[in-house]
Image 1 (cartoon, one colour):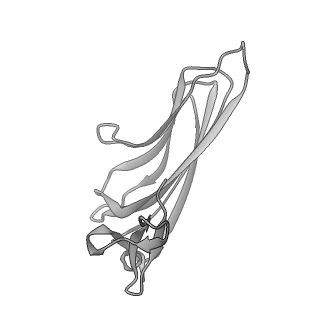
Image 2 (spheres, helix red, strand yellow; image 1 turned 60 degrees about the vertical axis):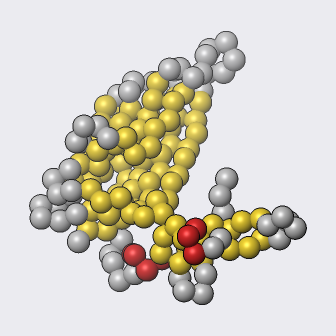
Length: 150
């Protein structure tokens, strides 16, 4: 687990524990992003739900780039060995993926979630679709993305 904190210059840095057990901000080389990157941008939130297939959450506008800042994925499954993911339409590039490995012997339902904030937004080219995917009718994938276009 990592903890991040903002310093007086709006840089996002790792929060570290020193040898005495005190919390300190990482040195300049530990800057992992800046809250200024999204300042002044119109943030776009796009959700999507998929069961046994793919749902497009966002198609990047022609002539623009989408900067993916955050993604989240939840699933609810009634069968095992199935997956849920957030991916792009180009080469099915994975952004986030989760598996359910349930067995009827121990339990018949499974659910989980994951969220990720990228320290540097991921640029996604014009025309590319950002999708949520479910590998089977026995798993429902609920995804969401936050980012901006320019």
